[in-house]
Length: 73
Image (tube, rainbow, N blue to C red; front, side, top):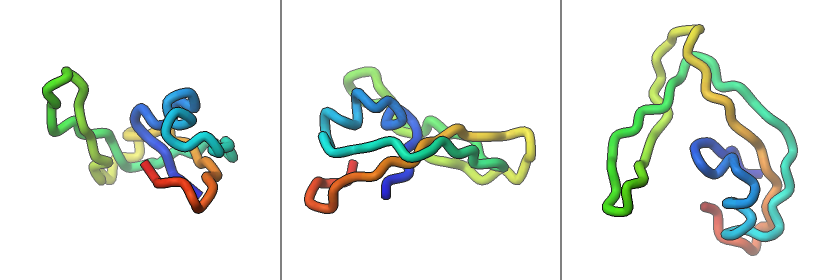
């Protein structure tokens, strides 16, 4: 099982790297916000989930099933 957030929630993007992926459910991670902390050369950014402990902060994520022979993203 893979817990996706950020751009990996998009199944088209995830399938490019792991063709076997199958969406299982959507989840909300309460008390966290995305912290975009690193800008890359191509203009995209890396982020991490920051624990804020604020109930109003929520990250919407997705769970996917991925074949164990495929590399995790």
